[in-house]
Image (cartoon, rainbow, N blue to C red; front, top):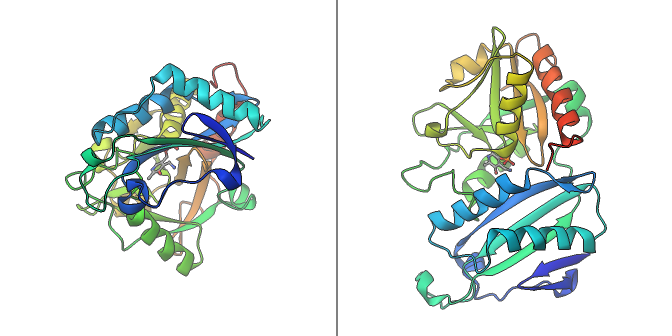
Length: 287
Ligand code: PMP
């Protein structure tokens, strides 16, 4: 495996950062997770744009422009000879001193990993996934905006531990107001009376690239798709529920806290959107 690290392609065992990197010491950095489908980098521009936005929001100046990052991504995919897979693009604050001050880190570190990913067991895509509502509340946008895809995932990791302990696939996190926010690494959708609903960015969610694609595909299928706050009671009364994310793709949710969603099996609209999503990933619009 070849890893792109600060301007060079190196072997996996040589892909190392210093322990003085503020990415390690403080989780100071941002990242993207991106899919490769049939040799094309899925929604590459949306991911690069969000990467630069996240970096800008923490005042981290990426030492390359967007066009260069695009080129590095394709270079790494090619070096690993992957036509389907997953890319992790990361920029950290870089090496600094044992104090928080980011200004003492002169040069950010950028690396790109190309690998495979399978987030959930295959059968969950056909039969649906049980989830819990986590006790861990999602970070408030007033504390650390979840729209910034940063290296501080401890909040989500704690919710992930809850769902692993509960023996289910995912944990849906509420925001500080008790509304549905997002899963540990995915956006949440419900379907009620034929309408597809997902919490708005003000609910404190990451504006998922997959979320955006699914909203667009719903529109094309003539299914009304809206952003609206969703309470736990609305999730409990939903006809269907599904999660979206780069690694997750579109995964149906059939149980929340042990209670079935709708009739307890994968809903018709969820099925349509899963099919449309897979077609889209193989279409000329994928990139
Ligand atoms: N929310 C969180 C917290 C995430 O980490 C992710 C990405 N894994 C998503 C939502 C989904 O975003 P995308 O569709 O861009 O992968």
